[in-house]
Image (cartoon, rainbow, N blue to C red; front, side, top):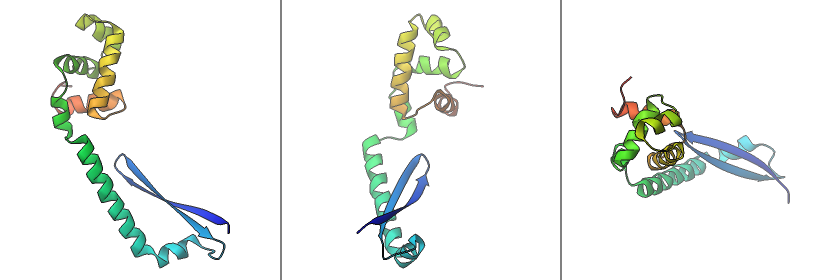
Length: 133
């Protein structure tokens, strides 16, 4: 029995869920399968989303504001300078540390705040009054 794959992509914020359906040769239309089983599919997706949300909330355990409070004083200093537009080398000179140390702190800050880019860091720093534009 061979199968034909189909996929539904659901996105919520930064999170993406993918439901993959495999059809046997007896079914000719993915849409007919979805229509026949729409309620069950919706229920499974809602149940999965709630479980994932609870797991994520439990693992992160804190909101963005609480995560900022967990930054060290040095990390806050680095965040302020980098978010205000200073390069890593400029921030290193200002703070009297090496550029490598700045990169180390930025990586830790990104991990603690669960962000992936310096733009996100600048946005968070502005949002919580760590820098003023």
